[in-house]
Length: 192
Image 1 (cartoon, helix red, strand yellow):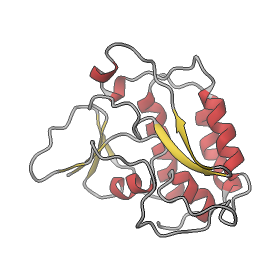
Image 2 (cartoon, helix red, strand yellow):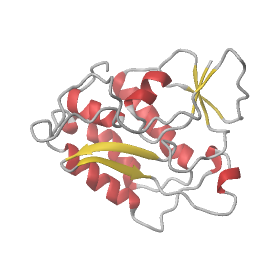
Image 3 (cartoon, one colour):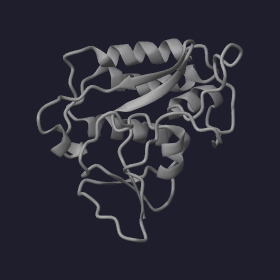
């Protein structure tokens, strides 16, 4: 079994792992700050940009399961993310085909990070025609035979990534391992 953390608009590396037939997304694990659990990265005119879905902080944030993390709407992060995504991808070849699948997630409030991110995972899978990964709400104790990727950093560039067209390719170097929406809006439903 391949055990993964939850990812907000997961990176291409996260998706490669999540599409394995034995992949399971563990939302019973403890929340870890500054990870793909509530962050994604997009390619913009200024380079790589990190987007963070704000969660309600507290003394016990590290002791809470990912499935129990509530989203914090005291700041307008959803609006900021939607504007950033539109600015980065509105001139991409496939933005108009797929943007309407994602916009509703930024126009209404979801109580939990899990519901928000799982909905985005299911939206990507529906567009791509992929079977969604399995989710476990109970913490998974990894065995020797399991590949436990919960501690892996799925954010940041990967030197071995194969380049593809990006909106700002003429001015900026290729930004590898961005959110799945970068590939989807730039290349369409092509396998990466």
